[in-house]
Image (cartoon, rainbow, N blue to C red; front, side, top):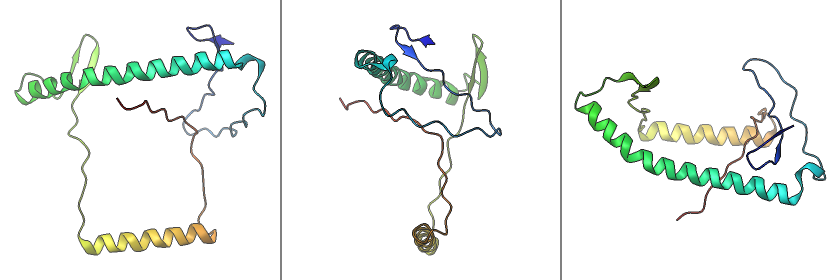
Length: 140
């Protein structure tokens, strides 16, 4: 079994190939395994928290740098797609969003109500996506 930088064992993640059917993930064991005792779990959670904090700090450092890159792009100093030190950069204009007239918003509300009714009546088929963790750091 592999181990993290703290020496704690980590389980291998299942490989999920797009378009290939896979068996559902097994349910977690009812009792914690001896490999994941409380000290190992604490170390695992501490490491995850440290990485998330580092990620948050790096994102904060990256934001003004990306603003400077935007300014360089707007000044014509860089192309929308270029490479630098074997790293590819590609500018995207952002996602387009729309504001709809009131008549469309009312139709959307009617559709949402019909969807809720279909769920309540059992006419809608439910499916569950891939499980994942959401990890939020405390606000500073």
